[in-house]
Length: 179
Image (cartoon, rainbow, N blue to C red; front, top):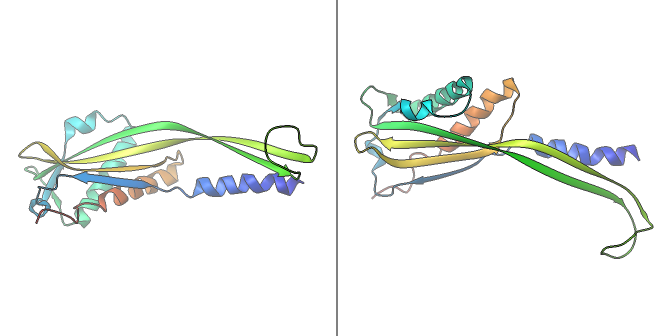
């Protein structure tokens, strides 16, 4: 009987451990992205981001690493300005597990029902936006968004931030650019 009660709890932990990050991006299809070789962070925008200074630095370092891998370099006179924005919300999950046997569906009393548990968990879902702005025109040309469950675990946090940024910037530059 105890093993039956432990099974749904194990499934719940396994599902929560598989953190998936969903990403999307949007861009101006009239822009030739091959012209952008240098970047700088948009300080005024980044100063407004409401995350801890440590997390902000982690995000900026991850962006630096990813853009460098793409052959871009930081510059005092950049082609692109990089801005970030974050959002978070509390997510409540209710899982109900009932064990028993009986007949039929519907409402009412079941004389053969012999057990059940309800598990309530909460997590924080975070969203990271990375905006790329044409530095000369001051126009947004590309925006990437990543959503996923956040961790408070210090060791996992940097790894998770790197994964968020890598998956978002994997969509930059867009493959369907102006022809």
